[in-house]
Length: 113
Length: 112
Image (cartoon, rainbow over the protein chains, first blue to last red):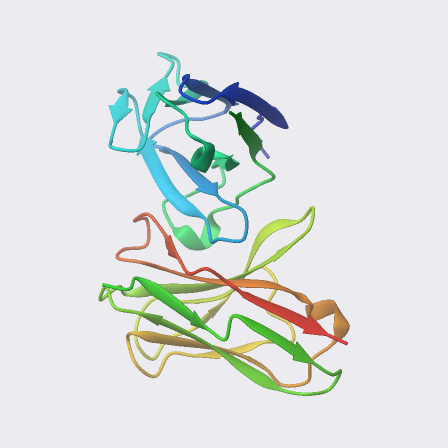
């Protein structure tokens, strides 16, 4: 089975951009890339998703490489409240039905003052 | 608009006791899900529902039952609690099968 790979952890300074990478080297077809995050003691929160083009919303930007084998989630001005575990969803397991979605271990982002 | 609400927030049970966790959503979503989260294991799907009156098994259904008598509510039952069911339980809902999930803030259950 294909796997999504992310670093275990990373940190950034408050106010700076946080760039969170994800490799999904076996992505194919019409598989979307989804990102969620989980702040401590809260439920996961949807952030953004994309197929081919770069996407931006009020929370973040998603940059997907042309070959679609990797993506980067960008938090343009990280705050202390952005400290969380960020999940890049394995698109090969996600067949378009949330019942097949797997979260994995994610990347822990620590925003320092 | 409260989103997804879970009750209770915390519960301690003795082995063999039973309880029901309630999930309520006010977004008129068709799909609802129950997950458990354990350290180092990530989120695992227990059961889900694709509409009122329907339920289906997820990855780890054993020891749990669910009911979806009303569209807005999804109940998770433990008939005879075991220490292995100590976990944090999250409920989620979505408008369609592939729409973004909306999660509640969890129920922390300890079984002694």
